[in-house]
Image (tube, rainbow, N blue to C red; front, side):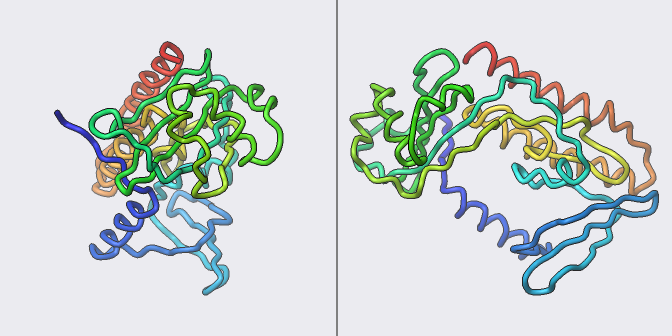
Length: 258
């Protein structure tokens, strides 16, 4: 049986960055994009970091793969109401010392608490497990205190997993993200294109983020290469319609399953 292994995100991101550097990609760490402008001839980003201060970068095209940072969506005022009802999430990790052996302890699962409220269980390769709740925004209002206290109050609601995690310390202060679903008014424009979560985000459970990121990022790069070779690209058909078809699949799953 084919199976994926859930790896710690920070380690995985570091490996990807190091491999890109080895292949000649220049990466600016701890850098913030504070402005973006576009003309018919070029795209210009204004960036800021502690080492070099404020500077500018010129490019033929900008591919925004900033994920939940949503750089261009915010700078260009492209935010739009999401397709799905607004939900929030709260999550952390624990050292999973009571993890079951075999299949039971190795698969990503989620526990439906009530309609539109679910708990996720994502076992990681280093022995830690990611745990979290997703629910409508109003559902979170019944829990009081800081995020640590709120998550402690929620855990007994998952009867299946509470005995496994009861009284185990959180590896970091639980993080609450409000209004997790995102949308934009357009996926491309003059000399820019949005990919992955910088464009659309529906739900943290069904891996829609990694699916959109890999597929849209690769497609955007291929289409830009075509334009650089003076080949006409119909962005609405070749990019938007294709990516939206995938978004609609996950949208259907989120609405029908949960």
